[in-house]
Length: 452
Ligand code: NAD
Image (cartoon, rainbow, N blue to C red; front, side):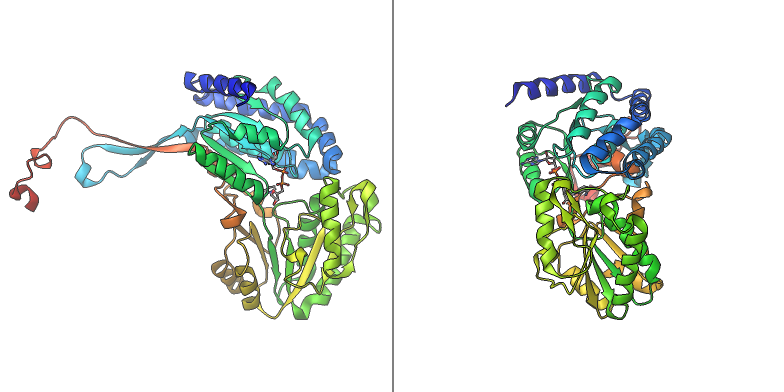
């Protein structure tokens, strides 16, 4: 095992056992420091996002910095309430006495982030870990290097170094970290590495939260407002050039509305990014050459409705819609994670449900219909980590909703109180007075007592 990691962990363990991280005032101050870091270095963060992913400032603010700041604000507002023990009823058999749940921190946790939202996906779990009173090591993704370097440089200036550490590097660094014992691991990324993380965690019986991905479908029924549905799907798909874990991966559209929907998507694309998206301010880039090549490979898996242009030197792929796609094709097997949107025809809701249920449980599911009954049917007859009706991505803005996958799209949840709970152990506590100690509960269990 690496000595540096071992020393770093030993330092954090000592801090944790000293009790430093437990008081409300300390957690609050660390969260405020994190807020201050984001405020004071906003431009640097936005520049790093621009460098790593071609993210425009507006997009970077909306999906990363703004999101994180409101996450911190919400957490600060509710923290003292979340930390309070929760009283529960005392059953008659254990009376007199009182019972309650005491949220205690888990200890030293590991947070492994992904590259597509490299600030939010690393620091939002950290907000929850701080709120719950833990020490943490955070490992940013090596695929968004500028952002990773910036976090590595800035975090120690704002957060207590004896409680929080940033360790940068790639798979070998992550593997080394995973050899050590943590009290919880939160990993965000693909399922292949998710399995590696879970296997490593099993060695130490460490609980894991796995925020994974998958193919998130959008179902558009005949009665939906097609223009609005197309606009919201186009927004959710092409934000960050499609590299969003909850982006609509493919669309199932009522066959009668197919052509109208494609035309509406094209209209939105022109409106959002103009005739030449490569030079649009608000259109991002593919993270690296490997992902670029993978994505270009999907372009042959259907008929081009529009888009399809690409430029390897610029890691640019045009917003693209594919029609006449075979469900068995590669683009319908892998999570796309890029700006290519297959649109498949369905006859009705039942066919859409059948299609979704015959595949892995998605991270997000989007239903578009004016009929509350049909949307409810979609909810009740499918599995998905999260569902959003008549819109995309927006459910992320509600901290009262837990975010997380199910089945192959992940396990565990966070955001708001759910994040606090993920990084806490709800210790059950019962306290009884010494008074009233009737002998009938103690041996010998005579036949008279057994009848009681
Ligand atoms: P990635 O390549 O950035 O990897 C994620 C993390 O795993 C990185 O920190 C990386 O260093 C680490 N890693 C890589 N190889 C490893 C190994 N062998 N052992 C241990 N750690 C290792 O991210 P990715 O996997 O390309 O991310 C894309 C996937 O993440 C998509 O499937 C997407 O849907 C999913 N995702 C999910 C969420 C969510 O919140 N549920 C968010 C973003 C992305």
